[in-house]
Amino acid sequence: MNGDDAHSMMESQYIQRHHRHNIRDDQCTSALVKHIKAPVHLVWSLVRRFDQPQKYKPFVSRCIMKGDLGIGSVREVNVKSGLPATTSTERLVLLDDEEHILGIKIVGGDHRLRNYSSIMTVHPEVIEGRPGTMVIESFVVDVPEGNTTDETCYFVEALIRCNLKSLADVSERMAVMDQTQPINRY
Image (cartoon, rainbow, N blue to C red):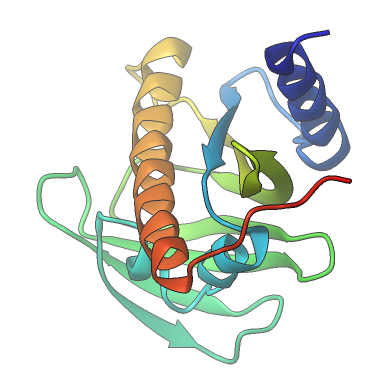
């Protein structure tokens, strides 16, 4: 088995274990994977901050929390211009610091993402002999009237890819400043 096969197998196992969504006929779903050259604790420190998505999500201009940072808390996110929305109201449905799992559900906003929920998991891995992180984000969302399943998935996947690329950029910059040491294998 080569390295790519091992990665694919691990990705599949994590997706089967953590990324289960109940999907209706009028919904679409997908899972995206990003490998980041930064240690898991560093990446998780950004992902878990439900109150500060703007630290790595480039389309978020501001976030206002309603309540504490516990399960059920709600955030009001302002979206930067250029997207077909200005606000999104999101609820924290899962935050597991042991397993590194974050789950959110969109509960309002001036956009077309109805019944949107996502699960994001963060997993340690070794990349080029150094501590790295595999991030998986999956989602399910209603297909809006007048759109196809493919169009809806393509749009949401493009947003997530952009967020994951930004997460990688921010995490990798932080890792360089932290001077993460190589893993010695004996």
